[in-house]
Length: 248
Image (cartoon, rainbow, N blue to C red; front, top):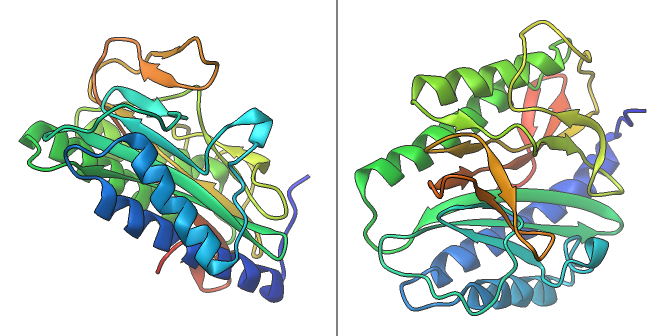
């Protein structure tokens, strides 16, 4: 069942979303050549502590950190550790926060130092795919409209949409119904209603769309070693159209 939120509840999620946006800002500043992925997680933890928010990632099915830090070929769920970021890398930062029991979740992929044009185009296209999906998050649209919009932008840029990992509803839990694929057919699927809150999160690969799960049970990488980018926002469906809740 898809739960619809009232304005007060969305207000709590907006507050949580601002904490997530601040976590992204801190992690982006920390994403310098020579930093470790654990350094980025530490930056995110500091924001949570300072804002009095809880992490919805830490301890989730045993996940050991407050942020998923995923460089280069890592698509999603990278565990922060001693991997050192190098000039020319890209790194995805996925994190969330809880305020008064209400969740927000977002991801961004950023360049580390000076990055080649192909990688920048991957980042720009993935961000544009997210924006296209968000535009479809309006009353009386269909779930398939979101996926179709994301897929159209991805294909126009020459990139592949990851299919095994999708977006989701969000509220008093980080993952609620419905699942939100980043592919689909416009005009098909669940009808969107005012009060729904969705975490829309395209993941695009520069090479093939196939994925591989590493032995740690979390880290998902591109099967061919190509780079991947991941962008996500928590979005409320309102009478006036989509409202992004994970903005500064």
